[in-house]
Length: 545
Image (cartoon, rainbow, N blue to C red):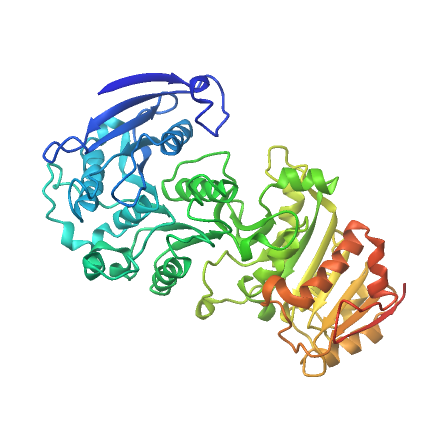
């Protein structure tokens, strides 16, 4: 066992973090966390030498390799260990007995022993024993999730290790491409207690699962089966699925997976990391069809909304040749979830927009928990946008354009938009499958139309759309501002928003936004000239232009 004192400069080739050169860490190699089974059960430990030296959060890294290969010495895991140590975590990077040394479930027992060792030595390590998280990839991802179900893993509670008096529970568990079940016949498949699929229930441990959509080794459908079953039982499982093979979250798609890990550990290990602005992240339809792959996030500063935005904001701003326009979105039913619109909103964001939608981020639709929201939520979103745009140091500072803000809402959400029509920060409006007619809803009525001060698009779904008649009445009543009535004659009240990328309705919405907020005047051929060759089953009316 040896200890190395390392400055940041020595590890620039390993670490993806570029922080101040004054920060340094110590790495102690090959510490035995159990001595009763042979030389394989050792770990490396990276400790920050800056900041408080007690009660730090800790992360245990577990290597992959099909349970019969791999090592903590893999450059990817060593770099990850250094990276998180530089972020203020105490990080252990472990080996375990491979199956050629000891049969299943020895590797599971070893991980539990490593956790118990960390808790037993918490004072010496300078860690909080209640703030230990795990991460692994592939086989290591499986072992990490198994650590997360530790409280339910009664079959391993009598594992023969010197630290068995200590709990092996962890505060959170993350896994990249994790086998949640073996997926083939054989002895391993007969032992469901060896796999996360054997512990479906309201587990108290939060999980993060990272999966490649084209993974030929760990099939996404098996991963998603476990995620969905756990979520339906009330377990907290964040799921990030991106384009890529088995190496997603190992050495590919890190632009998605690493920020998700950073936010996950910061949230659940209670480590305040100023470089992490959001708490949760979701990738919908692999980030949309546009040139800037997009994500949806729950911002620390706006937890009751979802921000849909390009994952690389700096790149989007540079290629957009200016700050990004913003769309505020209100949901159908005036509900507090945008999950039914996430395909459309993600796709819009992937073309260089920031979308702020009412409602907390949901990994899985939970409509039995949906709540109505007040129309003041639109103003709350606008206030947040103004604050972020004008606060140096904000993640969105110099990246969003508060002079180019649109508001859109579906059904009751459209009424919420009209209730805020007088707000001078709004430059244009999109009323989707909605209209006031002679009724009052969500603090809006026909009188609200008098507050319009910018162009407005009504989008309806034919005569079967319950809002069709009211939208026609509004169109006739509007006298002062430019108005377009676009009718997708066969789509009905629900529209196409849940279709891939939001379907035709989303394309029409984006065409309007590109025209009104990005000045793409070629879109006048759609809205003014009625050129609908790319839109079947549509009709267009316009006036006051």
